[in-house]
Image 1 (cartoon, helix red, strand yellow):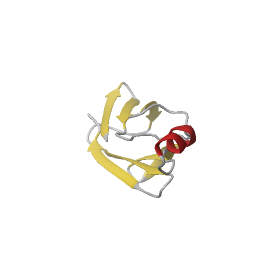
Image 2 (cartoon, helix red, strand yellow):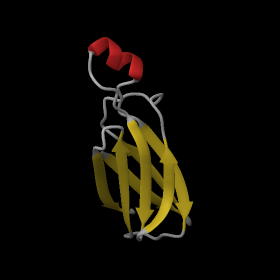
Image 3 (tube, one colour):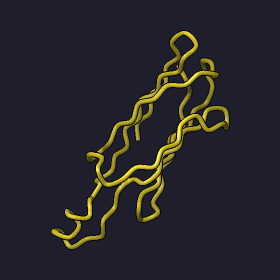
Image 4 (cartoon, helix red, strand yellow):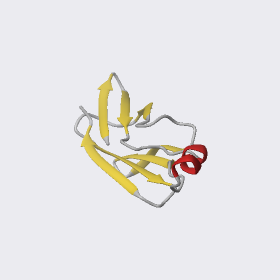
Length: 97
């Protein structure tokens, strides 16, 4: 996963990309494998949840999410985590620039 977080004024703008196949139910049936896609994303800044979303199979392969929030400063830690349908999880930590 790649995460970029930049402070502009008092707003932190975040862009994150998850490397994931995002196999839909239709694709899984054709390939003979289980469906597997990201079902939940969460971002924390200074141990406070600043972004949370539930997703479905209708995101593209290697999905990108963008969001912004207030209440952080340069150098603060930010952590992005996703969980997929099979229970796999990925976490990336970075600092706000």
